[in-house]
Length: 218
Image 1 (cartoon, rainbow, N blue to C red):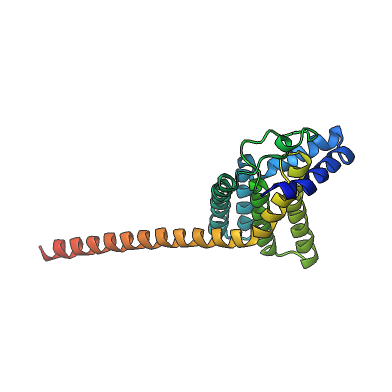
Image 2: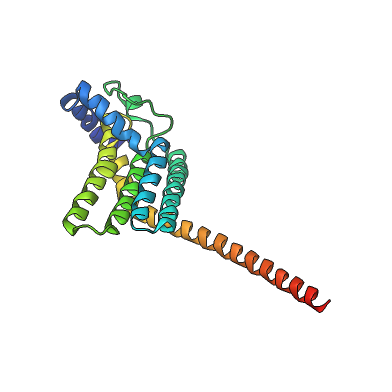
């Protein structure tokens, strides 16, 4: 299935590594790719919370921050499902000319890092759009978030020799529907939990009222 794509994609990865690599970029793209890992999720949640706290909306910030964690977990799970179902070999297993600068731990298709990076970019854009700043600055900040977290992380996966271009393209194309699906599931889960808590509180209040009436009757 992948052979005909490999004939086009392997030369692209080799070209990137031969013409765009340097010791500086080895380190630079290594750290860009790590922005989409779990070590960055907590700082990203704190940034989102801080943005909403500035607007005096801490509960919205907490909810938005929790959404990042949920999407991160969902991205990892769905990416794992796709990887085990497609089982595409990593580029360095297909061609010895490709240098691996970041050891992979599973199959190639799709890119979980890119999917999560794109989701974080979308969340940041949503948060930025709620800030009371000039629209030009909002657009610039959103463009920066997309450039770094979506496109930057995606390109870093190719540069580091762990993904094919089609892995990145597929992850970017599916990022928005995946984000919407994950957000919908998150909201449904939160609403169910909130409703259950509300029912429990109402039941507790009712019991307290009955106890008060009984005590008054005595």
